[in-house]
Image (cartoon, rainbow, N blue to C red; front, side, top):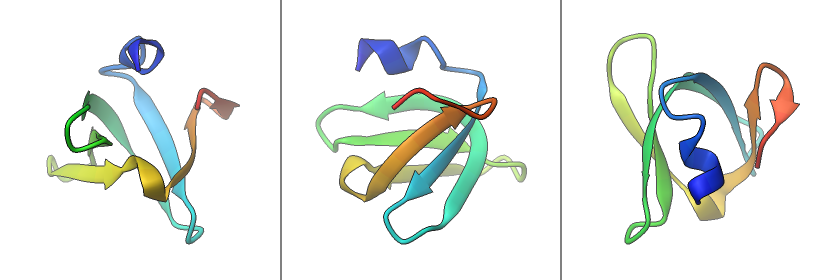
Length: 64
């Protein structure tokens, strides 16, 4: 997970297994709950569990 923390504060795009795309600023991750926190354009903090995540992109480059 340390490799993901390099991208904290940067814009990312998360694609889940259902095909939905979540865009926002990476706010961190939570190892006990096993997921990623992102802030969207409306300043809301959203939690996305790792079991739903298919890929995480940063400027169209896959990072996870």
